[in-house]
Amino acid sequence: METAVEILEDNKVKIRVEVDAHDVDHAFQHALGDMAKDIRIAGFRKGKVPLAVVRQRLGEEMIADEAIRTHIDGWWRRACAAAGVEGIDQPQIDFEDGPVQGSPFVFTGVVAVPPKATLPAKLELAAVRPSTETPDEVIEEELEKIRLAGAEFQAIDAPVEAGHQVLVDMSGAVEGKPIKDAQATDLMVEAGSGRLLDELDEAIIGMQAGEVKEVAMILPAEQKPKKLAGAEATFTVTVKEVRARVLPDLDDAFAKNMAGFDTIAELRDDIRTAREETAKNDAEGAFRRNVLQDLGAQAEVEIPPTMIARRIDDRMQSMARSLQQQGIGLDQYLQMIGRDMNSLYMELMPEAGREVREELALEAYVEANGITVDDTALRAFIADQAAEESESEEVIERIMSDAAMREDVRHDLILRDALDQAVAAAKEITADEAEARANARSPKPVEPAKDDDGEDAAN
Image (tube, rainbow, N blue to C red; front, side, top):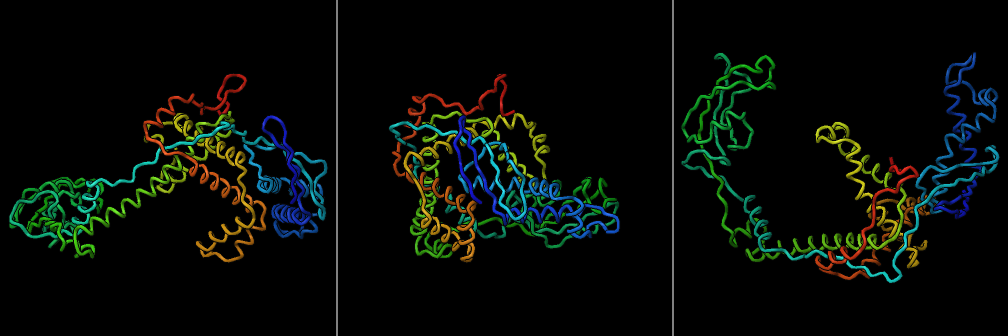
């Protein structure tokens, strides 16, 4: 496939696409096969008509129309990827002559593209880097978690409290007849954990070893078998032993037994080192995000409503997929929280607008600094990724030989390198300094532009 790009006015481009004869033939074969599945001709079963007969009956023009209908979108997407063009709406496709088997097919498409952002002539980036210092109380909280994990339960002579482990015998009956699944001996439960029915959970609080108590209750609606649901039942509970959690001392023996360190000081140092390493990584990620936000805030650009609308749609679809995995529909979720699609759309709009602005600003930064990635660097990157995923050399060659896939990866790598450069050039400032910069800067609108009637064009 060959492409040629012509820049038009109003942030539009025209792409001339020449589809290889091989791809045209492939489209005809698919179209003919699909049409053969549905055509009915006397003397043949449905789906069993010979292709030659189907071709003769339908004619080349009809097959060509089907080939275009089913393949033009794919050809267009491949052409855009190969040409490095990102369309933000539906293209206007045009061609003089339809496709003919054995020959290349030429068509053109005109599509709107993202506008170019303008950055200050003297760009000065600055952002806040969060502190990586770990307070002592965080270390102590982590030690306490380890201490709880090493706790032991010991029998005590005291009334049951929430959190105690209680060894009980239990039996339940309805009208004197034992409930099959409500008989237990030497059952260990944690008081107040909610494992037992509420009435039983409350009843054992305050009991002591050797004490017996009868508890009357109404069985819940979900009780099985169903004939017992809502029935009056009596449970007899015998507390046989009460155990309380005993925490180990925070000493050298604890450090050695629980974590393999010779001293408690070494354990504290290890926790601090691990926490600070995590904080360092988190701070680096936050600094990168803050630099990108500062870059976007300094960009001048009018964002097309369609770009914000598409970003919001992507967010909604992602949310819908996540909810679907939990067995909840998006509409059902919105009803549960008392919201509707319009209010959710409006809530997502500011963040979507900011994200789009930042992406356009980063693209402008790429152009302003002439950031490129050659094939050698691209191949090395793909090879590293393939090695991490234990992929074969064939994957590298497949990506490098496919123009669309290759340029997609190249573009992502260019944006990553651009952000790396921006982060390296950025100055670290305090939160107060960042607030002062934001206040001194004129606000950048993130809402979609209005159409000629003054209405929200994204709606």
